[in-house]
Image (cartoon, rainbow, N blue to C red):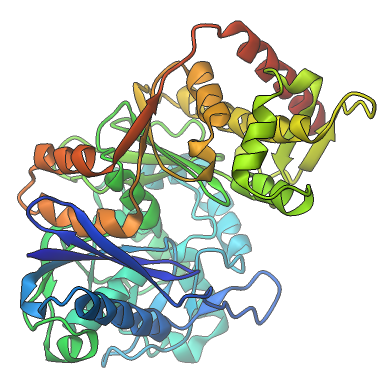
Length: 493
């Protein structure tokens, strides 16, 4: 028997097939093979047609069933991960009213900022754990103000994963974790944030029914079965945004555990039971997948580093080297600290952790006689690693206590220089796992009965790659980090 997991991204849809008994990944496919397009009618806008997500999800499921010669009867559950903060609007027939306004669309920034100022920073921090910012609630307010004809037809708003679940089942529902990422959840009242809804003039009836994150949320109906290739009655067992789901995929559920990714951008996601929001201007706070209004809270603190893997990829494309392996070999020939060369890697837009400053990438202290490609490669790896450490210092100032970091087996964390630099400076292990969001979403079916031990065992047995431990000769790393930090502070102050 198998679980199917979907990861509804803005670039592609990934679909995983996982054995239900062992949690072992059988296969992961991607649809489409090339990157999905985004519609940008104006600068700063980003939209996608939700029907495209569904079309590609169905294509991928049928591909897996055909490739592996299995029956739809063998698939006993569905898990869904999805791009966070998007807005999907449907009428009473479940028909989409407009394109989804997705996570990277910035049109609602002024709306969220005005709300933050008028409602008050203290109340937003205490009740929402965030500024309304550019999140889903502010996007819905934008539709109300700018597209009143569409707003008047709305039956329910949804997040992207809610929409995919509706296409399977015909039922519209959401989760507390999902509502919190849209800034619709009041953490103090442990209910819908009616004060924000009232401030925005939003109809409370637009909020979908709330279901548990784990367990039977709904079941595939006849229409969903005919389009997806799954059987009628297949249960949807789990749903979460991509960053909480990434943490789940890495077995990060408890205070002291941190999930990290080093893709185009980097993310540090730490679980805590504290509602501290000292750094809410630089760190987002959401209900984690195992948050429960009736018991100890599990809050996910999310810090994003825009200038991460994109920096190393830029060097690969422009330095005249053939591969990441070659870059890592060149970097390994250079001592810690890159002989004084510093790269500030923030060249991918404004950095929230730098209070939304756009400082760009800076290359500092190059000696044209002594420095070469290897110095640039090492300085880039160290600069990205130092930015992760800088972010961790921000999170620790917000009350995060850490005992382990877990990360996916991506290009950055496969680099010994990068991972050992981070581990040595933060002082705890970095465990590397070969998994994906789609596999995690599928495997979440194992948690329908709340058996976290079995879930963790499946990850360790199937995905564990290696552990990077802090090095004993820490002084040279600390010296290099302080040198980098000094250069950053000269720019930002």
